[in-house]
Length: 316
Image (tube, rainbow, N blue to C red; front, top):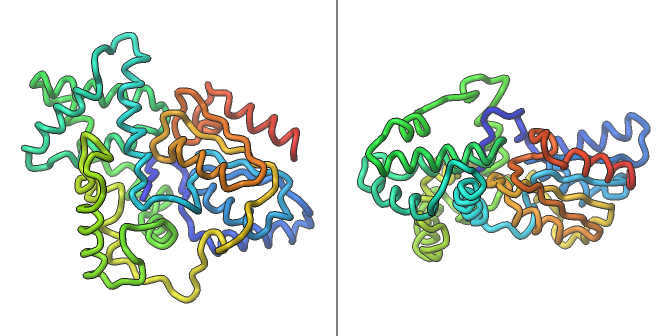
């Protein structure tokens, strides 16, 4: 689902990693620790907290995925990306007008082209990485140029760029799919066969509110490459070794928990961060204005780093 090209690899098999964390802590003779997780690391950290909460003095979740209560459509990601286009324009002196209207108009034009809206969806999906204001403004400028018959900025924005995909030390698509296809909710029953999954996917597209991702449609979102639905359809069924990220019926973890989100993050959205916070007994939710994905590490000009330090100093 949420590819992270250009960042340190964040998707590793969750179950074994969780157990290794616990074994390392015990081997080092540590009683209670402070645990920080960002991006997919928040998925792992939540799973650890549900199973080994007594070993945690404090927990920090920076740009968090919910391990419970997530929709397989991940609607807040696309909604926050579309919203961020207008926010970026509103906060840039050189930008004016209605960015959403420009987006709507260019989508109507792109639907008539052979590549459709997929490349634009890919660009929006990556906009939440740092620096998000600049990224979303760049998208809006390319859209505006396209509407004025200048295609070059849009071609540069959407041209094929392998990034780290061919560099095995930087990124593994297999590792990502091993987590995404197994742990994240999908638009079908994971125990179904491939043909049945395909039928369920098409049924989900037909039934989902058609205006949920305006100006895009559920079908366009489902076929977008970053989503990974097409690849996960052929993924093996869960084996008997699979464990859910949070044990069914487990009570909310009680350690002090800081949940951080970037305001313009559409890789893990503020809506998802609020969902995560609601599942903990002692949470604090902080939103970094103008921030993107993992603002405490990649956004040096935000206050998120200070939030983490003060939180650990107080509770760790």
